[in-house]
Length: 339
Image (cartoon, one colour):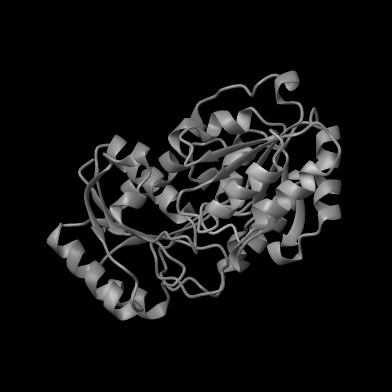
């Protein structure tokens, strides 16, 4: 394969790092299959260490407006002889896409709502249960390929390895807790306080990032209230092993949910942004995950009840919909296309 693929995405404390992680995962697969990956996105310091050598070139740029960003993307594509693009930014609408079409570019676009017009050659929506008719009136390109449902979920390479979880005895009482890779909006302290007050012997495995603006407050809270029952992992480099060591996950309903499902953990979910609501409800319908609503509506009693119920039934098998092979499937679809 002699393809050059340009990725355009963003990451910040406000929107988290889910978009960046799935782009990096896809970029690594492009390289694995013999292609070349380039990035227009956040500062290179945001790139996870495991993907440090994936991109041949990385250019930092902020999103000003659709027109300016689309023109810059086209110019960068021409300069580097880009064959295909991957767009992972929900601010990309009609104007942006029309400029790409005028420049004869072909691209893959992520979409989780089916609410806007799409001219992409490939549209990825990995939400469980998604049907093609969601896009009946939205596809403007007659050759668009829809890549739907969790077969196309993008997980970091380590999740594709078939590794058994820790034993039931080792996992007993261990709860994975995460509010995404950005600003946790003090949700983590609410969750921790709720779980620690349940009166059960729980170990709370909390994941956050060094870019979380509330990290210092979280550290202080754990020091004052954790009582040795909280394990805090910052920028962890072994998420699969951490998940496999737990019995239940309490998490925001972003891209992290696909990793959790792949490891077989039952989930208690809440949404940190509007675009996570449909995904959370889909996981509840397809796997029995408990959805508690928007993070602003989280109540102590609801958190405790959902976690208690799942802890009692940890031996019940989870309906695993994610196998970790999504990146290979997507790249294969893209490479089979010729303009």
